[in-house]
Image 1 (spheres, rainbow, N blue to C red):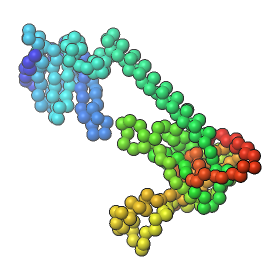
Image 2 (image 1 turned 90 degrees about the vertical axis):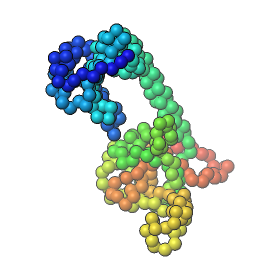
Image 3 (image 1 turned 180 degrees about the horizontal axis):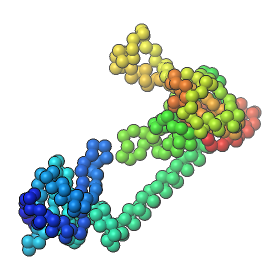
Image 4 (image 1 turned 60 degrees about the horizontal axis):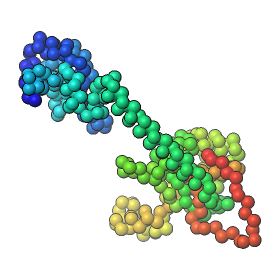
Length: 302
């Protein structure tokens, strides 16, 4: 294999080579999207010839041409493949399937990848259903009062429009492979308000969580660690800030409805439910006298 430079003013030669190409693919790197692939017609490439830094052909030992590459800055460019078998030998399976999607090898590869993705998605759905079943079966406070401490599960993707969107996030694994951030966190809360709604009111809230309301508390963040003085938070030492954060908790409004699992809302000073927690549980075990008959609470999901 060797490389032969082609002059940009060799219009007839370039035109002839492009006419023989069995496939044309270009690529460039984007800081947000990574490598982006595209295609161009021979006419578009010819119109852009002055833009290319270099044009060269990859040749076989017998002198025949495998491909022609039109190079742009930083490795970006366009490749015109002259020979499908050369492309098969030099590209990986994913690259070959992308350039030659209808080739039998590509069809088999795509089918295998699709089956693998579908199996992975099914495994995720099954795991989410199991986790939701576990959460629905766990103990929930029998009542809520101002000053109570509870735990709730808060999605990292906050400011969602519906409770269903929060539910979908909170039944995922806490940490997924390949992600730096968690899907959700189990946070300590202190109840500042209890709001009981009718089923119709609760349903409206669950489907319109971005709408302003006047019946939810202020919310916010407090801590069992007291900072001395009245400085801005960033003005305290690192150890003090870390202790404050480690012992912090949400101030929340618990929204209840007969037959429904509560919403735990931390408005953080806004007029809408900025952060919404699900599946509240007592911060400390509830001791029920042995002579009291416990009737299970019939709850539905959000």
